[in-house]
Image (cartoon, rainbow, N blue to C red; front, side, top):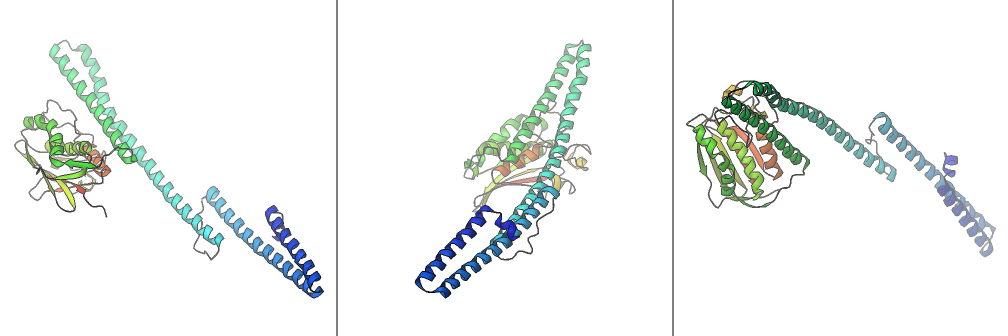
Length: 366
């Protein structure tokens, strides 16, 4: 090992320098004192040089072992074992490399999971988009054989409705992708809850009236929070529309706001059948298909992704006559928009029945 170390130019130069200094000191001792002093200086210098060579050889051996372990990590996939660390700078380096390898292993596992989730999401997206596109393709022969102007007009409206649904789905997925990637531009400015509620509910006034659903709003003017008014209104619109689509005629949807020293809260409740306990943990999952959809007034097996959560913020309907089959991204988008502002969104069942959604924007971050 010492011979291997001596082949290192830097080590050889340092060792040669030590021997030259030793020779100079021995010669100076011989001139100033006597031969015994010169011999003592020479022996001390040679001993120091040998110790330096031995310690350097051991250090190089440790580095060689560490290099072999790193090669095993890169080529074989074996992890570095840093449980037997001792004192010394090489062992400290071994420990830090072990931490890096562990972090890389966790990152690799996360990337694998995200890749698998992305593949599943792409499969769901392709399925969701394929359905309306297939329906539009099947309508084309009907256009060719339709002689009645009313029939043609009806088919045109259906095609427009399906194309709008596809456009909304693509737009919503892009927004969620930006939110997941942290690329969503979010403002943190004072926001009036009253303005947010007005902005969110105004596009739904006609739909609420045609469905016979009453909207009750209780938002004091002084209630506010720091966030993004546009994204907050879009998230709230998704939630209110979702509740509207699961509320029977003659029912109500209420929006209440309150604040205290810790947070501002916006609570939306409906008079529907509520969310099945089995679906409640999954209500914000994208493309989730619940098995208890009938509890919310939709056919079992339909998209519930928000189970209760199939309502997009502007998904078209057939003359607002019945809730369309949703994509299961409405509440997922709402959750992404609220989370991007540092807020939280929770779903539960109200004590009096119906679903309950609570948006919370904290005032203090601990």
